[in-house]
Image 1 (spheres, rainbow, N blue to C red):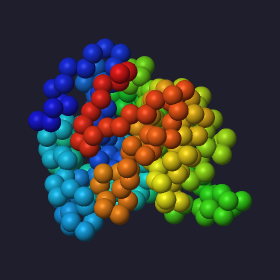
Image 2 (spheres, rainbow, N blue to C red):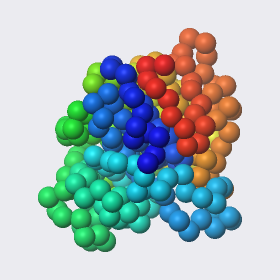
Image 3 (cartoon, one colour):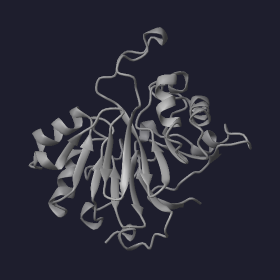
Length: 264
């Protein structure tokens, strides 16, 4: 089995495993395991993928629930979801309506094991609680000439026995300028955030926008995500980290397919 399955998690801590891209698994002291945006395709042509082998064999990681942020292929991957379902029949699948519709259309997972969430919803995942928040506003940002997103984009704050972690999904480029996006997250007081960003792609916050986002939310620690997977969308996390001052938040750079125990 995957090392996360048998790891002894101390009370009042959570283990957060980052595989690559925006794919995570969390395990708390009660043993609950939640995956976020599982993306483990087997076909990985070298011109597209940095690594030839997926970082997880889905059969090796017992899972209680799967959280999906939005219905893009690297976030709602029915290939991976089918393999999870083949090995663990009672998993709960939670996400926006487009992601759940895709699951019900492309897999044989029973509808009663799915749960549609919208921003503002709260869902219990065993001993963890997930709070759904917007990553992109449904209307986009007309004043900044940013069109509405093609599908619902969510992020999540997960409360794992008192430790709160924020997973951004794919946020709008000027996320930190939107009080209506920042405030619901800041009010939940997450301790650590895992933020999608990119130095040049305008779909996501640039490095400076990622810093502003982390500060406005009030994070103590922050880690860069949406990387180490695709050849054309990778970036240097050290360059991202260099944008943070000693005043914080404190940047954390995780190695691909590794975990941290939080609080550190």
